[in-house]
Length: 169
Ligand SMILES: [Zn+2]
Image (cartoon, rainbow, N blue to C red; front, side, top):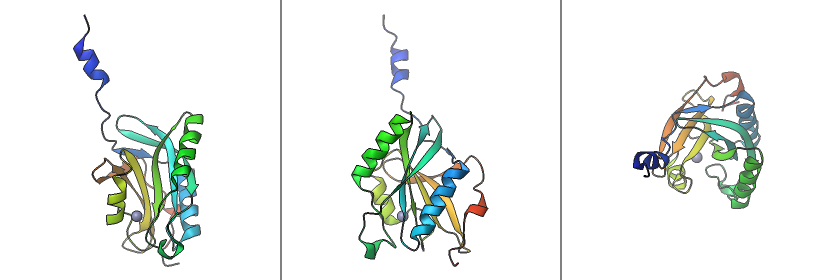
C-alpha cells in the first residue's frame, strides 16, 4: 500500500525564505559594480542556494543594463542570454540562480512600481537593491519576489557599513 501522507510530504512547496546570507565579498562586488555605473542603474545576477527559510548567496555575476542609456538612471533590464549563461555557470558550481541585484541612484533601496511589475516575471527570486537611505548614504536591502509582490527579507548579519558610500559624494 502506498502511503498518501508520505506522498503529500513530497509535494509540499518550499516556504518563502526569511533570511539572506550575503557574504561580505559578494556585497563588496555589488557595491563596486553599482558605484562604477552611478548615477545609472547597474544590474547583476546572484547564484547560491535556497533552503526552506533562507537563501545563501555565493556569487554575483555582473550584467549589462539593456535599457537605453538615456533611461538607465531609472531603469534596468537584463539580457535573457545573460540569464541563461548565469544559470549554466551556477549549475556547473553546484548552485542555482537565486536572484538579481540592481542599484538605484535617487530612489530608496525598495522596489519601485516598475520593479514590482517586473518581479512578476521573476517569481521565487531574491531581489537585492542598493539605494540611498534618508541621509543620502547607500544602503543594501533584500526582497523576495513571490510572484505577486516583494517582501523584505532580513540579512543574517548586519550589512558592513564601511562598504557603503554616500550618494552625495
Ligand atoms: Zn529598481
